[in-house]
Image (cartoon, rainbow, N blue to C red; front, side, top):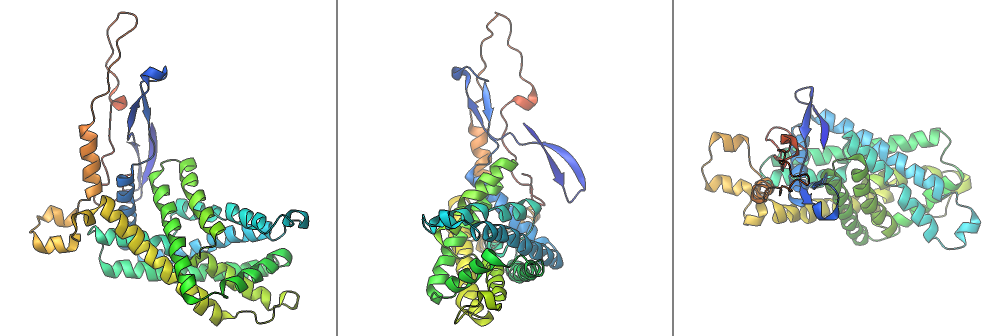
Length: 376
């Protein structure tokens, strides 16, 4: 299996082998080997670290604009869900609100497909990728904090702009407006702590979607890795800052109209104080501690019990080690690949000699990320 990869730094296309894992199937009557196009969990974590390093090295204005676009894409997915689930026929709704919630959850993940495959940046994903890069010694803490803050601002700017566009297009009417107001009321009627905890649960799943998407090497696999975690958090009622940054302003705009006005409807202050701020804190906790620290302990430097930054102070490094920090995940992946037995040759059935398989069909393992850019 060969895939084309685009080298953004060199500005050239190169054909690169992504053969990762071979499994014997001779006894089943099929081919001699099968190839997996899904990275292993350790190498998937290394890909996350590379993504975080890329973000930390990017220009801040680029981070901001990619975050603004991501806010707009969040709006597309949320508007799709609001439009369909907000206009369900009454004969369907008699079976319970679960029907509307299920449809909303199934349609919503389309936005993350737009975002992850176009290279846009969500605040929620940045809380996982950039801290992981810092933990592994491939980014500094100032760049990590700046990317997360800029992504937070860019997401809300893009989401609010798209909410205004939705209103200007006349789409914030009828079932969409009624459901948006209902979402506003529901998400601002809970306590600070409850929203914070729901934010933790949400970004645990969102970061898992980012992680699974980075492991898959084809479009179908990436979407499968996205849709299940995202639809799960939506259906369960967890709180996602970028999604709320669109839905709450849209609900507020709708609540100003006489046809959709609700007594005691939440304003901008309540939207921030009772939802967006605690939700953002919860998302940050999940991304940094549960995902970045957790997966570094499983596959990265934290499994040794000491941060890479402290190791650098304790042990002298060569110039090459300073420029190209190595990941435990990649080292383990290479070691396991080298330890695999060679592919068994089958005896020819016609009594002839066994032909040597082409070089590209022999057992190969991914070389892992090179130091200056991802190599997935």
